[in-house]
Image (cartoon, rainbow, N blue to C red; front, side, top):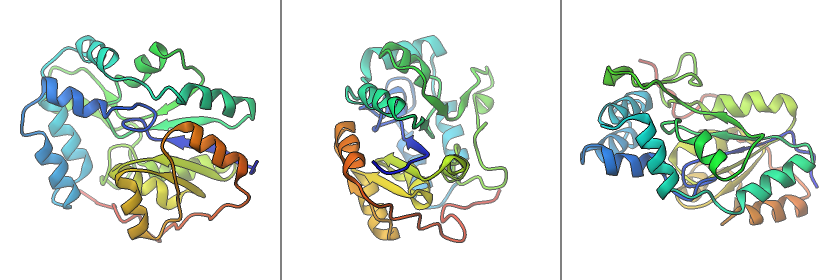
Length: 232
């Protein structure tokens, strides 16, 4: 197996089979919530503004949000064995998410998964809707995203080469800076457009099998500046 320092994994639609934030918005939000994702994708607003607006429209107590997530959003059943396989090889797995954050730890506990670091946004539970969510893991200057996956990858590289596993738009910036990328769904076309080498995957058994057989690392594309870069 390759010498790997860290494995970073997206949460919504990746470690979890569902996009939990979307489920919560559909159940407890306003029907207009997709408009913010679309504006973000078009570059008309920054990621933090979009996430803040969507969090503001969620009308439910945190315990109700978490309960709904546990009842309706299953973890990928191959993720727990993958975490154990990685632990046996002393390669840390970190979840990096640009979602609402509050449901990740409960879903991990519900699935009996421990020893996984979580890097995500912070749900404050504030009465004031506009301060309901904050960005503890954002970039200190750029507001292109809530959680900066570029920064997460760069920090993880202190331990050695980084593997990134993802599926969506917010994973673009992690993929650009990682040494080996596993992509599916929307991330496939994004990687192709950005010139990022990647391996297709369906579940974490695929990721494990590929890592056991992989002999080299493509290395990061690492553009001079992240293409999602935005200042207020």
